[in-house]
Length: 147
Image 1 (cartoon, rainbow, N blue to C red):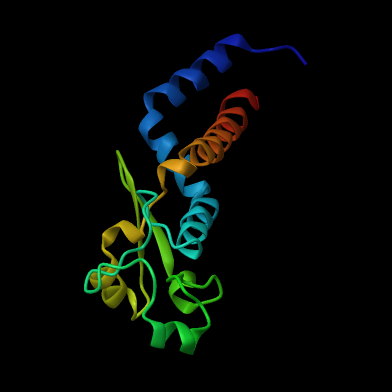
Image 2 (spheres, rainbow, N blue to C red; image 1 turned 180 degrees about the vertical axis):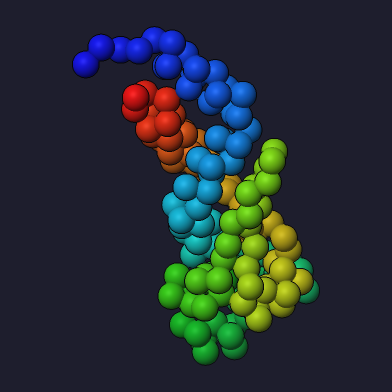
């Protein structure tokens, strides 16, 4: 099969003309993996800034002794199988993306631990970049190089 360079150039230019939309699509295609990064941080009692989850009222990163005894854990974590974890979503905008959750516990958790519960921490930014870049390149190959 002979390479049609004119057709390839046209597709490449169309890709470049819509680069913001293509980046958005790569992020959307990465949503599950990015949510998994956020969930992993929460399970390790870390927020999106790589800080320990700190309760606003107590100022502590550990649970109260009574609650720790009741739950069998010393640090706050939001279990992967929990409904809060399952309700985490990713919204993709033109220049940024953001996380949120729809579970009824969300306002309580945000009030106690802050909005930094949501997002990818600096320690995971390289992973985030690889995940999104892989989808971006796969989309480029499929849309531009498949003639």
